[in-house]
Image 1 (cartoon, rainbow, N blue to C red):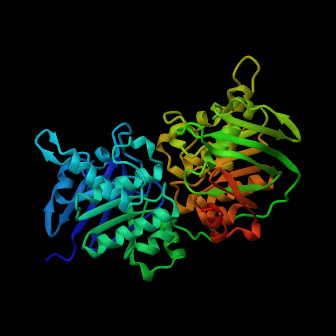
Image 2: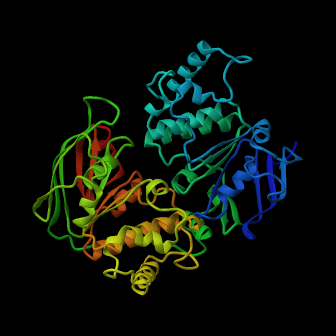
Length: 503
């Protein structure tokens, strides 16, 4: 019997001649959970696409040994036949199919072209009960929230009885109790002898569930250790190639007078008629303050920012006071004109324009304010972009680099720079470090802290509890449409936030 269920030996992958993987080696034992960590752009996803058959032999060099035998994975179908299943970070669902059909897609029970719907719905109901989703198997998949869809994606792989399960950032959309459920499922699979590759930026999860952890950096294998033999500080150092002295470099800003007050904010539920997702809440924001907003996924935190920024208008009631004066915000331009910017959670969808350069992405939100009365002043534009590029420490050859070629952390810096070229007073940030590696997280936190020191006020929605605790000067918690807790700096703990979030 082979010592390893899977070996990937001396794997090399290039894009347009530029190496993405340089002689990478990994070994996976039967029944173990192997964590793979590394910064964005380290090569983790590229390596897993080779394993799952998205990149086929000839597009890369190296060997794959499966259960002691060399194999060539020439397609996703071949990977599945070997028992390799991958659950991607990006949710892959056909929203207008029902839950049962999405769960069993490509694996529907029945004979020939005839589907046994009775069995399909009965088995799906058992699975939904197992993952604690209170929904009918016949319901449209779009009725689920993102965390529930991720759990369905996991179970879609689970019911195929894989030998190897690959999870790429599996908890980015999950609540804490869903994370606990995922961990129990992975433990169950481990006991059955299933092997798992667990890719995550959340180191507390890696230490909680993994047997060993492998680090990739710049497309190379840096280290592989039993989880008990490497400290978190050393793991981070291996990932980023330097010591990160303080992951949360939050400095204490001087908190000034009130700059924003919100009263009677109500937001209609987008899917349920007659129900509000937010019901008559009020809060304020002070100069230089980072106000955190906590709560479970689906509690309405992101909708609060969208309504205040003018992105969500239908079914919204609100009274907004800026600098003590009542203002009307009915579209994003209204918010921008009074000095509010918004870094959204979905940077891939609406934060950046992929095929434009760093420079053009920075300037696109500032076209109205660019120098030059009748003609574009390209020298001043260039100087503005270069200054922001340097201040935000964007890692790229230069400002003409296309954003699509940047890591997630550097894309987020470009979005921040885009807004900060304007004369903002308030910045909304929704999940500012979602999907970003630890090294880039520390840099984003440092930038947010510097902005607060400069007198900017920040409202930050976050599902990352250490982030919420460490970065917030004050925190409000949303549950069942209401503010169920408000805590000052020393009072913000995971216990106090969670207790308020489940009220």
